[in-house]
Length: 172
Image (cartoon, rainbow, N blue to C red; front, side, top):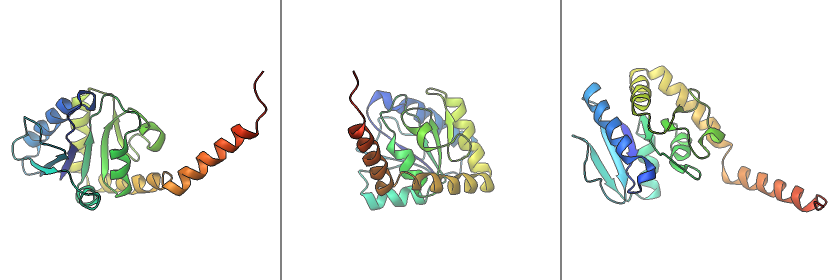
């Protein structure tokens, strides 16, 4: 299954993502497509299903049961959905925005493309759908990478950084 969040904000790349899903539908007609979010987009890809406002548990299940998450955002402050998907072992095809380059490695724990690169996203999705070994390898690497962003680890890093700042002499 190919999964994608369907946000209403233009910078999230919904139009790019819908193009990706339509092209995947054409190239792999039997592959289930699922979107989630607050409300379905005005234009749903043919044969796709929509999950409205999934609970945290339902969202984890969506990630776990998906082969690939498509994250076509054009701009992000952080980019949490790819990290959430990675934590469940779901392969991710994403734009190289926000903190994604900080928590993943291209072609190792996620498949990166530049914002707006619909063809690159389609290529990544189809490659992962076509190779069990590659999707499983990326999913395993994604789980390992996501562990480094667990709350206790991140808060300890933040605390260390804040202490270093507090203990450093003031700039003159």
